[in-house]
Image 1 (tube, rainbow, N blue to C red):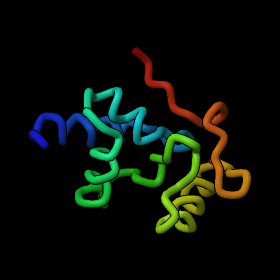
Image 2: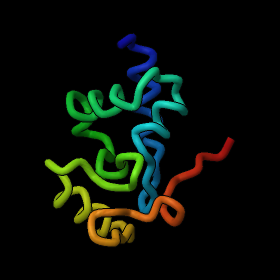
Image 3: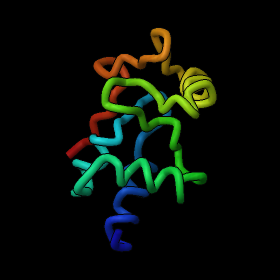
Length: 97
């Protein structure tokens, strides 16, 4: 991945405000990444200082291996899940154009 794309992804993730969520696909589309998987790879390799917990799968669920911590962090910000699923219609972040 080129450095410019890497930084655009980091910036887009950083912009998701507390109390809101985005999806891997949303972030990829915002920055012109060819795949949502690139966003996931960035978060796993270089996302420790980002609000990684605000990024969900397209169906509003967290990745299974981080689900407990991710949902707890979201709950602390006021994002409530129905079981393991966050209502994207209610909590999805829509950046201002």
